[in-house]
Image 1 (cartoon, protein in one colour):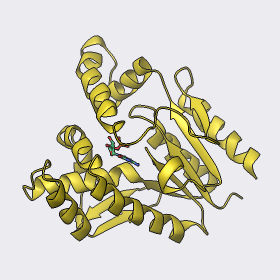
Image 2 (image 1 turned 90 degrees about the vertical axis):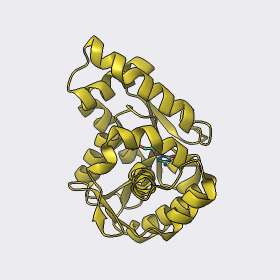
Image 3 (image 1 turned 90 degrees about the horizontal axis):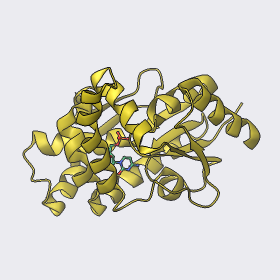
Amino acid sequence: GFRGVIAVDGPSGSGKSSVCRAVARHLGLRYLDTGAMYRAVTWAALDRGVDLTDRPAVAALCRALVLDIATDPGAPGIAVDGVDVTGAIRQSRISESVSAVATNLDVRADLIARQQAILAEEKGTGVVAEGRDITTVVAPEAEVRLLLTADESARIARRARELHGTDDAAALAATHAQVVTRDARDSTVVDFLVAADGVVEIDTSALTFDQVVDAVLDVVAETR
Ligand code: C5P
């Protein structure tokens, strides 16, 4: 079976989290959600009242945090200084603030080093790692490198169903600004909208969940 690193990048609403977990389960690999790490630092900064625009303070907080990351694709989780924040980091107050933390280059340097250490540890088993800069910065040497894209309306509809359980007009309107604003802010520091050299792009706009999983598994199979 495949052993090594599968690096997956993509914007919010590309469906990459559920796809990556399914791929990891199918292949018996570990799963690393790097977005959860940026969300956990954001949770800690809000919890401790650290001003998100105070970059040195947020970076110092980040470096001091103990992050425990569960890489079981059936039950991924994250704890900050012993507090399980797996559920709390999905709150919209975190989604709205996370870009301010993720565009802090000192935070990025710290989290990228931690992500690379986790990948080095899990390499023997094999791991699917997802985020915005995995194919380009965190693991450019990964055996499999993928960019999952989707057109804007497909991404907004997917996020609306995740957040509101429906993609009716009201849910789409409520989700639109959130998706577009976060991607615009995030893309000021990392380019996750264009596939880098050697990265396979999968446009998921017109594909079902199972079709995307199969497309990823096909790329992995061709890599062996
Ligand atoms: O993937 P998810 O939407 O949970 O990521 C949350 C946020 O974390 C993103 O909006 C982005 O600001 C940041 N992120 C990042 N680099 C990564 C993964 C996530 O900057 N590799």
